[in-house]
Amino acid sequence: MLTPETLRRALLDACAIDVQDARFRALSTLADPLATLPAELLYPIWQDAMWRLARRSRSHLLSDMQALAPAMAVLSPSHVSTDITMIITQVRRWWP
Image (cartoon, rainbow, N blue to C red; front, side):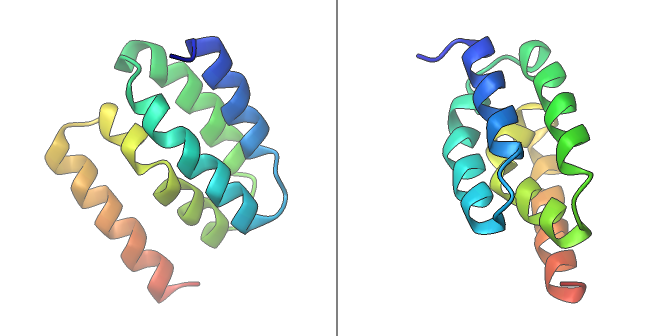
């Protein structure tokens, strides 16, 4: 199992990838391991990542958030994370 610090570093490295498809794949690969962290450890890591990802265009941010959906689920009740994932998918379709 990867340590929280190793996951944090890997996530921040993935956030720095400029090519959207490559970043999506890297973030998707990290989503499940991040989802194994307790919320109190994941939250500060999530904040750092979102701060970096939010600098990109809306479509890239939404794609990145979709890739990280399993980790996002740890930070919210299950019904909320499901709704958020559906909304992200819809917004990406409406406003590419």
